[in-house]
Length: 336
Image (cartoon, rainbow, N blue to C red; front, side):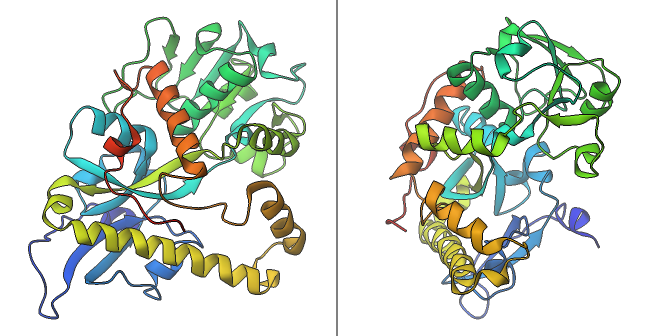
């Protein structure tokens, strides 16, 4: 049974096992910062955890909170589901953040040098609603002079997740189309994608990032705004959260411990990281993002990030109202 098939298996958490532990199924991607939890080096107190590692895209295309006791999940889908009153609740845990400006591409022969150059143009995306796109659209409108309604959007699949795009945004569905193929053929001017396009990864010369020095642009944005975009959270079935609130706290603390174990591993010796310039990369990361750049909890720097995300979600029609963070994350963590 592969990871994707295993993710479809039902759960059966009812009571404690014969060791007095609460069985819990968790669906989670395999990151360095979650591997201590996946491999059992970090164990949540009082819980017999079964971790199912899955393709990261599963957390954006299916309501995995209906299938598992707890799961990593798309932040945009969660915020919408929670606001609609669906039986799901998030832990203040954020296993994935992304430098989202790095996921905006155009052709190398295009004259564009900034997002405002795309006014009146066409942008393709696998779906309009993905969390990376929400962040990008919000950031481009607020900081770079490009609003969603100023371009035509081309998507390759129906939206799903109960999302209905705003009426003032023009979206054309080309079922089955791939954003990078449309860009290569010149049918669109730019693309927003949640995964790096294969032609770019393989070094094909016809595709480039829209920002010619995207790393510098990303660092400038983080320095100016204090926002390091969060794209995934960890959700739990509401019924399990209500029956065993201690288990939610225990699982969240285990994520914090796993993150610390990962951070400490690299801090002890940068050679543990498989990058030729790891020693410089880690120093630069700490200088730009701070020592605790992957912190959990809803206070501290995360509050501004999450409140900005909720504002963008409301502006873009994901949610009909702007909930307080305490409604979305009813438990918090001590400073970590």
